[in-house]
Length: 195
Image (cartoon, rainbow, N blue to C red):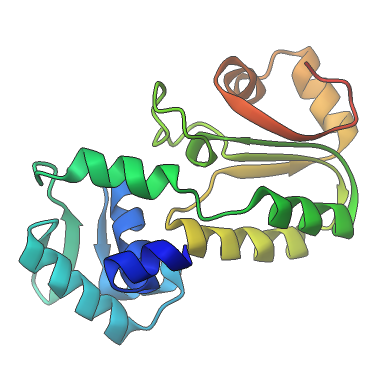
């Protein structure tokens, strides 16, 4: 992300661009965006004003609340989306290192926002981005995912389950798992022999 940050004027701007590109249907207030992206409110407001001046964002005010949303007819929307989402900010090695060091992981699968395949809608809110199966404590995993969310600029859909729960859900053709395996996904750890 460092190179993109230099190219686009800083990491805060890259995070803001990703936030709106990955959630085009949402509106965000400054404090909400700052919390998600883990950047200061002042910096968030400054970047939002700049992106409004470019025509990338629009501002909507209701009473004393101001929110921002993606202007879907911005002329460079598709090229920006392809560049900023394809150039994934999250290293697979970083994820493997974290999950391997925190417990006995049997299965780790990435999908959704982590794939470069745009043949499916990476914005589908019902699809998983990360599936973790194994014995790992939830609080450290939640903290790690929050850091990933700040890097990616999107709230991640993820789940953590033990092997028994995974096998039961798989046996009953659970929709969550079926959707994960039916669409493009990347297996980082597979000790369960899943194909």
